[in-house]
Image 1 (spheres, rainbow, N blue to C red):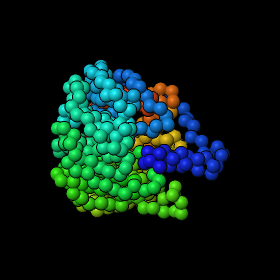
Image 2 (cartoon, rainbow, N blue to C red):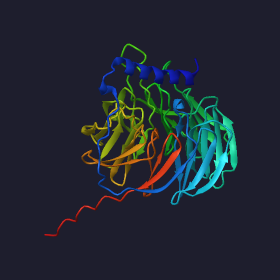
Image 3 (cartoon, rainbow, N blue to C red):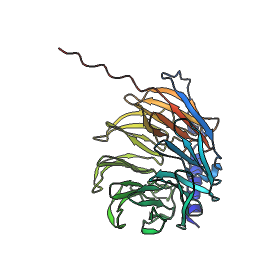
Image 4 (cartoon, rainbow, N blue to C red):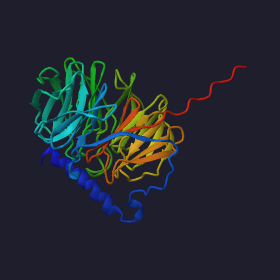
Length: 392
C-alpha cells in the first residue's frame, strides 16, 4: 500500500471508529449559539479560486511576502494578489495537481504537487524558474530560507533544494509508521536550522548548510494496543518565537523546546493535528476534539478552555490584533478574547466552506482560505489601549 493510501485509510478508519463508538447526539458538531459581534469586522476584499475535492485533504493555503498574497488550487493554478486591494496581479497554470503551498520569499513562489513535483515561479510575474521531482506526494507548504527550499514529502523525507535551480543539496529521512494521519508538518527555517515534525512523533532539526542532524525531540509518545491508538503524528507546523519552539502531536503532547538543543522545557498531554499559535504570554491550541485551549507560555499550565466549538474540526488558531481566531468545517471564523476565552465575534466565508489551514496575519489584515477556494481578507480594529497609570 502506498504512503498516500495509508494516510487516507488512517483518516477514514479513525472516522469510522468515532462513528461506531457512539451514535448519540453528543457526537455531533456543537451547534453555534447566536452571537452579537462585539467588534466591527470588515471584509477588505474577497476572491475565489478553484477549490479542492473534499476527499483529498490537501495542504493548500496562502503565502504572503511583502505586499503580495499567493494562493493555489489543486487544478494547477497559482495566483498573486495585491495584499491591500485584493487585485489579481498575475495567474499561472503549472499543469500539475497541486497539493501543498504556496510558500513565498526571496523572489520565489513555490508549490508542491500530489505527483511529487516541486515547482518554483518568480514572485514578480509568475514566470517559471525551475521544476524538480522528489517522488513523494507533498501535503504542506515548503519553507524558503538560507538559500534553500525545504520540502517535506509524505514518505518521511525532508529535502533541501537549491533556491537557484532546485538541485538537491541534502536529504534526511525519518521512519514513517505503517499507519499515519493524512497530512504532514510544514518545515520552518530558523537561523541555521531547518525544523520539522514527523509522523513518528518526533521533531527534528537539521543544519541547513550540510543537512547534518542537529537534534531530535520526542513530542508524541505512543500508547495503546491498536495502530489507531498509537498514532502520534506531528502534523502541525512547529512554531518558533525567539529562542523557543512550540510543537504539538496528535494523541500526544504540546511542548516548549529550546531552539538550539531541542531540550523540552515543559510538556502537557494534549492532542492536536491542526496546530497552535503563541503570543508573549500564552500558547493557544486547537485540540483534536475541537476545544480551544490557552496554556501559560512559561509553565504550560492550562489557563482556560473554550468548549463551544467541540467537534467542529477547527483550524489552527492565529493571534490577530490582540484576539485569538480559529475557523471551522462550516466556513465560520471565530474571534475570542485572549485573556478569558470568551467569544467576541463570528463571520462566515461561505456556506460549507471548510477551512483546514490556519488564518494568516498579514499586517492589519487576516487572510482566511477555505478548502473550496474562498479567500477572504478581514480587517478588525485593534483592541483599546490600556489606560495610562496616573502620576502620584
